[in-house]
Amino acid sequence: GAGVSQSPSNKVTEKGKDVELRCDPISGHTALYWYRQSLGQGLEFLIYFQGNSAPDKSGLPSDRFSAERTGGSVSTLTIQRTQQEDSAVYLCASSSPYQETQYFGPGTRLLVL
Amino acid sequence: GDSVTQMEGPVTLSEEAFLTINCTYTATGYPSLFWYVQYPGEGLQLLLKATKADDKGSNKGFEATYRKETTSFHLEKGSVQVSDSAVYFCALTLTGGGNKLTFGTGTQLKVEL
Image 1 (cartoon, each protein chain N blue to C red):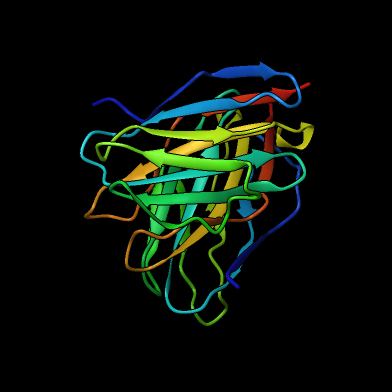
Image 2: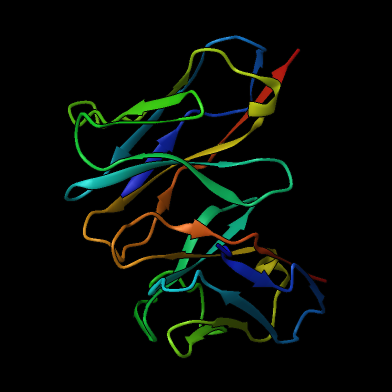
């Protein structure tokens, strides 16, 4: 079946602009996760959704970062007033209610100029 | 807090050599342990996992055994191939599902003819 998809695959933006990153999880997966992969910080957890609720937002680095999930499916990660240090690959993962294995999308590579 | 420590890379091996990538962890509670692999230009893929002490995860000739007494989950392969060249990430999540993955820093493996 279809895996986790993310869009766009690449995004170049100017410092100060807002960006939206989209994640489509595997159908039926109730849990959805956002991570960030950067050279200096490795792979970092950002936020976790169970259904449309976000019980763990502990990894969001600042209030410029927010995320929502609608219909228990698609999620959007929004970064406001982007900074150069936001440049990274943003990864989305999902898992089913019955197992803890997370399946990752291909990522969105964000470059802030 | 929970953490994962991996051996530093890059690791360069000749084809058919034996591979070990060390991974140790610190966790509250009883974690599940994972190895993810990232091939060049591709997304993160689950390689293998183990959910309780003394379990052995295996896939594609790779193995790792969950050692509670040494808090380790070392990755091994008896004979590596050029196609195994990738970055390998050790990770943990606390049991119960719905929990974030905590990753190690990743170990780059390069296999040469």
